[in-house]
Length: 468
Image 1 (tube, rainbow, N blue to C red):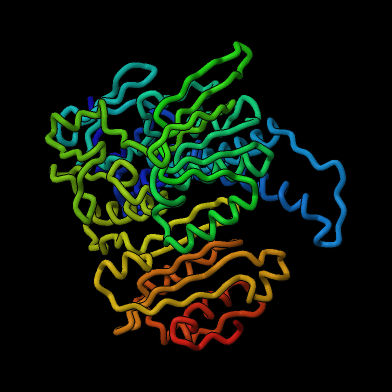
Image 2: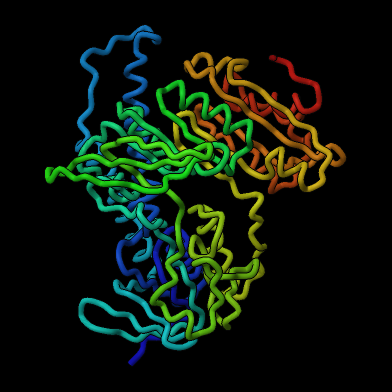
């Protein structure tokens, strides 16, 4: 006999488990179906373990700068398996925490593969057989996986995807990273810092192509200074693989750039060319769910058009961010519970990239604001003008703000430099509160902090900069 729930969530990534917990808080009887790992890709193979790796690289980088700070450090080195082991340990700890939270909130967990057999009816294939589950509402939170292009498919030996790169069988000597979005540039930053000869190929006209052009240019300047080779408006057409039978070998990449094809040899390639939604094998086609380019089509409240069926997170399309998924999970749970939540505003969702230097942004870029027809005021403040940045030994960076000249609305904020992934939230709150330049100017920022640059950037937009 089928077990019946008020809400069944398929997938336990950030959106899925947050949705389940919020639903339980609101008195719903909730179940989660997870086919692989509690916590999904983000906790196990994405956001969290990559940040642990990048932290190790950051400390390694700072150790090499010891002399600048009046310190000494001899025989600086690293143990790659130990670095990876720490990263996996962090991921395991947090994934275990998800299990605890679900249990604490009395959410029923089914470990198995879900198939929608009819509206609200789910067959769960487990190790012990099949189990039938019924949900008055069903939430798809199945996430996404790495996109594989023909000829660039990962093999785990010479060509890696993000999972291989998170648990590398060896340290790359000469590395090619295909794609300079957040995933690609973070892995490039990690391995380059540890000493890999790193080349990044980007098909668009600049690295970090979704960011403000000025911020991308400043980030690129730092990457090149650190020894990376950047190839923009370039396409990897083919990879010739020559494994040596010992877990390594050679890859010859055929790269088209400037109308010509060049060949370059590497010992490792990381493919980071985007993601595709996990929409197969769930029974969506039979239910009439509309899918566009591997992502479920939804309205502003994550409704699929099929009564009682919602889709949240990466499977529902851009922006592909864990915090977007979590917020959608809360919204959907509240909607199912009969509340009246506000829809998500995509332009107020921050994006963060944890390379060195860090990059963070929210809202419209300068270019997009102009394209949208706004008359704008732009403020800039460099890290070199900030006392805390200089004291930290981090004088390279920029805070940039974009305002509507007529209303004072903060249209966008863009940063590159140390700890900007923490700073950006100040502007995110400002946008949520519909703050104008007046409130931001009147806000007292603590001294000495990096956050003072946020104030100065606002002042700059209106010709009132004090410290530069």
